Length: 341
Image (cartoon, rainbow, N blue to C red; front, top):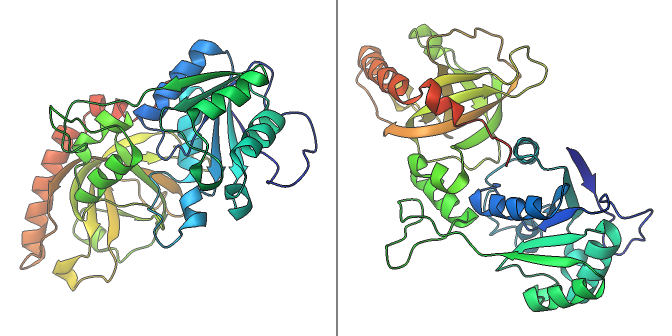
């Protein structure tokens, strides 16, 4: 998969359109690459052999309202990996600034979509808005694209069965969207997220040195520093641990795991929550230090708790590991693998 950047708004295009002839381009914010986003990709694949994801960098909310911008569901590297695994041919990053936000809708279509990208088909969701003040809508987009001989495909939003993640009811189901997934993560309702995301929720981070308490208790853990990631509610989770760092000979391997996200109250507490992950039935030793890993949250097991002593903590951990083994089965870990559309 190619990763491309278009020229910034207001600068002349230095060359030909970025996309190969005949490409279907899916346009949107694409926070999470969830099932709603994948519906756009499927429509694009039905129309063209080459498909592209066209999104904005940074996310528009981080430019327009940085104090209120929600944490994203994926790091840029996670989005690249998921797009590549889904079979996307090109990920196009449109630099987003206040100048981009101020573009009139007509200029957005004419300069960014038609001039800089040159797709044969544009695919968007039914709530897609564009241009200054989000004044551009589907009707205007269709007219301007049609005048240039470019087709427009509009995909209706997906409404899954009501679940804790969507907070929907039979009469009013919630929609698949980044906001619903984000709310479920914050509440720790991770078991419900695959029905929206198409896979378990995962965070990416680098393994750093910790206090070594886990190894002293006979349960060695990897401390994962995931700055900026949206973390679920503190507690203990059944998990998957994937080594994604290309420097490792184990890159791509997925291990069943148990994860503790919390403040270590039994040992006096930490100011900030720490994510500690124990790979089940395998000791990865010191090989993980400084490597990038991905932690996928399969199911919440319990709240974080303060124990009277280390022996009581070890007994609780042994119970957590038994439950994690029952959940993080080979079949469950296969669900972590993103498959082509």
